[in-house]
Image (tube, rainbow, N blue to C red; front, side):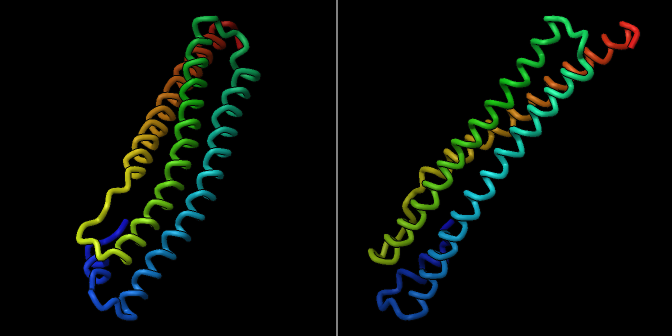
Length: 161
C-alpha cells in the first residue's frame, strides 16, 4: 500500500511542498479506494446471494422434483458453502475498510514522525484470509450444486421425464 519510494520522499527532513503533495496524493488515493471498495463489496454480496440461492431454488422447484433425501444433502452442502462465502466476504469488507483507515494512519505517521520503516497493517492479511475462504467456499458450493443437479437430472430421466 505504501511504497518504499514514497517513504523515502516523505522522510526528507525539510518536508518541502513536493513531499507534502506526495503525502496528500497517497492519502487521498486511499480515501477514494476505501469508498470504491465498500461500494464494490455491497454489489458483490447482493449478486452472489441472489445468483446462488436463486439458481438453486429455481432448480429445485422446476427440475429436481423427484429428488431423494440423499441428493438433498448435496444441495444443503451447497447452500452452507454459499452462505459461508457470503459471510466471509462480508467480514472481509469490514476488514478492508479498517485496512484503509489504518493505511491512512500509517501515512500520517510516516509524514509526521519521519519513520524509517513502514508500520504493519494487520488488516491486509485478514482481508486476504477472508477472501480465500470466500473464493474456496463459493467454488465448493458450485461443485456441490453441480453434483446435486447431475444426480437429479439423471434421476428425473430415469423417472420418465
